[in-house]
Image (cartoon, rainbow, N blue to C red; front, top):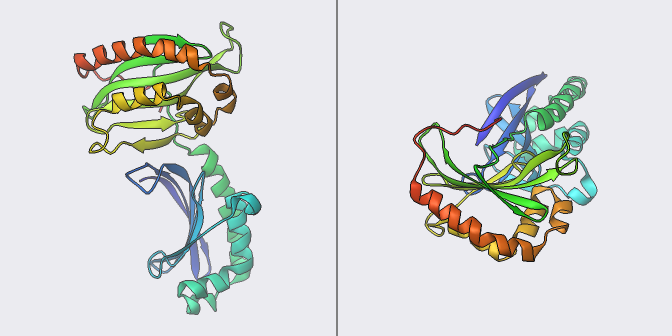
Length: 282
C-alpha cells in the first residue's frame, strides 16, 4: 500500500491522523485510493474511517476488535463530510464501542471540534491533491479505431521489469486536430514479465489491478480477449469515460484488433528494451 503525508492533529486525549492511501487490486484488498482518517488513543488506532473512491467504511478498533461497517453512498453522501460530522456527534459512543471507554469519558469536545476543522480541510485537500495518477507515453505504434485509438509500446521500468503496454486513448476536451485538443489515456495495460497490471483511468481514478499470474500466465492474451469480447465499453465506463464508451463502434474495433494483436506479439518477441522508457509524468 502506498501511503503519503500523515498529518497528525492533537485533540486532548485523542489524536486524529489523516493520510492518503493507494490500494492495488490483488496486492491490497481491491483497487482503490482516497483518504483514511484515524482516531488514535495512545499508541493504538481506536477508529478508522475509509474515505475512498470505492471503499467507504469505518472500523471499530482496527488494533483490537476490528469490526467494520459500511457507509451507504446513496444517502450518506461525501465520505469525508459524513465521517467528520459523525465524529462531531458520536465520537464518545464510538470510542466506547471500540473498547476505549476510559478515553471516551475524558474527551474534550471543544478540542475535538476545533481539531476536526483542520482534519476536514486536510482530508479534502489530500483527496484531490495527493491522488496518484500517471501520464504514460502514447506508444510508438498507434492504431485508430473509431473514436478511440490503441497505442503500443515496449516498456522498461527503472527496476528492470517491463514488457508490452497497450494504451487506450481518445481525444477529449476538443475535436481532433485542434491545438487545444487533449489526447487522454483512459485505460493502460502493462503486460510486464514480473508485475503485470492494468489501470482504470491512469489520469483520473488510477485504480490498478495486478493479474494473478497463476490464472493469467499471458496478460497480453487476456487483454486481447477482453477487446475481442467487447468488454472495452464497460471498462471505459468504470474508468470514468461513459461518453467515450457510448460512442464505441464494435465493428471498427473488431476490424483493427488483428493488426494490434500481430504487432503486439512482434514487440513481445523483441523482449524488454535495453534502456528505461520513463513515463511522461508521474
